[in-house]
Length: 295
Image (cartoon, rainbow, N blue to C red; front, side, top):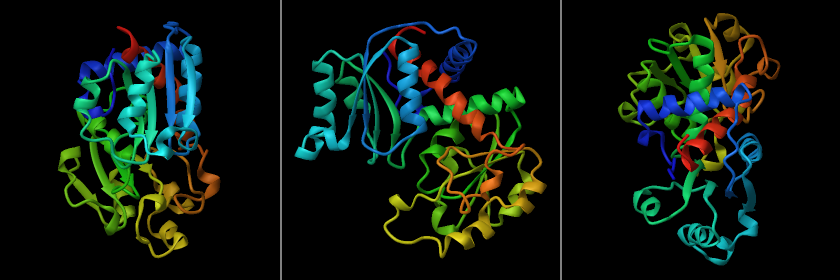
């Protein structure tokens, strides 16, 4: 059994293996591996939760879904003790989404005889989304080497950025960021970022692909943007900016229409949002197969 907590733990060979299984699943070649997996979702989710549920069904895996209000966490149980309970009950894996940063995690992973899959932990990591975005870009461009990818928005709180950027850099892409200054971390070198744009229009001129991110108000202890309408004008995807996009744009969802972008652009010709949602299922099949058996 393997666990997937962070993309930083994956080798290039691991990523290519997962991508290969994901592509096979998309072609209808799914290995029914069986087993039991707990889906531990302590944060709201649509795409990630439903695609993991569907992935498990495709793989012949029985699931038990637990939300925070239904768990003993509300009674004071620790996250580790919750995981230990699932281990004792004979589960093969636990897919979890939690509001806190699960770090450091190495000792916890070593001390459990159950596979852990991170479906999003606080502002830390969302590895299956990063892999989904990589697969989506590979579909469109084949080789992402030299591809210029711009992330726009709430970089500081984005686990999507922290998962996607290292994978893109691993395969030779160039990654840059743009957003309100309070939402840009001071040191982005650990993620391979070399350019920071103050002006989104300059970033669009540079980029082959632009990834817009949601402003995560639920993770901010104070208001970090003056207004949502002002944010759209300054950093969002407007029709005028859309006309100047050289390539495609992405968004991991959920999209805040008229904040991140104008609503009628979400599924437009240059959008890869639908493909991202569709590929999420196949990547999660790939990750579960990689984690729970030899692939």
